[in-house]
Image (cartoon, rainbow, N blue to C red; front, side, top):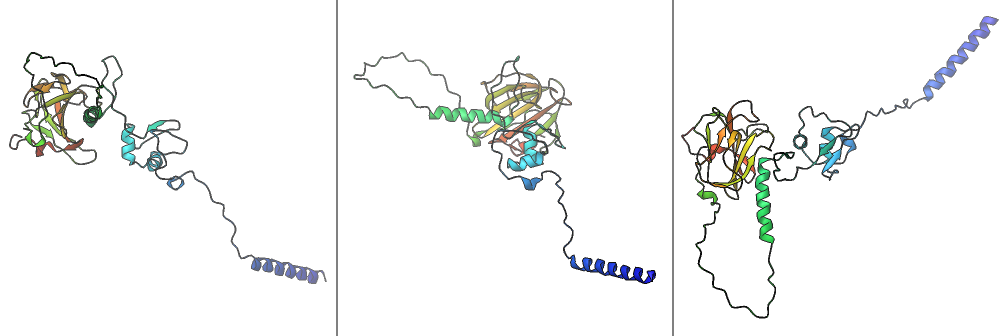
Amino acid sequence: MYGHVFRTTLLCLLALALTACAQRQAPAPVTRVYQGPSIHDFEANSLVGDVYHVAPGDTLYSIAFRANLDVRTLASYNNLDEPYTIFPGQELRLRTKSVQSVSSATSPKPRQDVASVENKEYVEKKRKQKVTRVEPEVAEKPAPVVQPQVPKRPVERFPESNALAWQWPTTNQVIRDFSTAAAGNKGLDFGGTKGTPVYAAAAGKVVYSGNALKGYGNLIILKHNDDYITAYAHNDRLLIKEQQWVSAGDKIAEMGNTDADRVKLHFEIRFRGKSVNPRHYLPRGSQ
């Protein structure tokens, strides 16, 4: 009798279990695991300031995305090398630094780019063009005063682009050529020994003579006209001063190894701020 009751109870429980399983059709809910912010959590071009302070969870890629910058450009603004390590609270610059005048030898030396010196000259020229003088009205004009004739000193002027006569800045051999790669050489490197003469590649005006630009050592920048400048880096001695005019072939420096791993001359030609291959301008057959 007890065995019959036990079997009947077991069958009832089994039927109830099967009925419950048949009624459940929806899968069990899955909880989404949040793994931190990604590029999908940010809005492009949403950072418009000059600087940004790194927040927890930020990466250089997410900051560059929001600032509408290439990550390599953002890294260069802040002197960061791969793998672009940053930390919360760090201040990152989102724009290039403004050009500052070169201070005295005892003052901190600003970091600039070679093209920024040319930009400063261009802005100063435009500023002077906008200045107009308003002469006060006078009732009567005084009698003109006759001034003695004084010979006028000729005014130095920049030559036109097609009037530039280029020449090689040194007679030594090229040891590293120009490259269009992103991290390639933006000019020509010449080998040599300490004290080897460095010559002006064309006539122009000295717009920079110093060592405040990181990576260039003792540097000279000549402006040849509104389109072209040349740069001469890693010199041992600088023989000319800012605002001085030079002719093509004038000795302007002596070769050295300042801010370089060996004695050499790094030479650049820039057209409207962009590095170009000097071989396209210098006389052929000399190197």
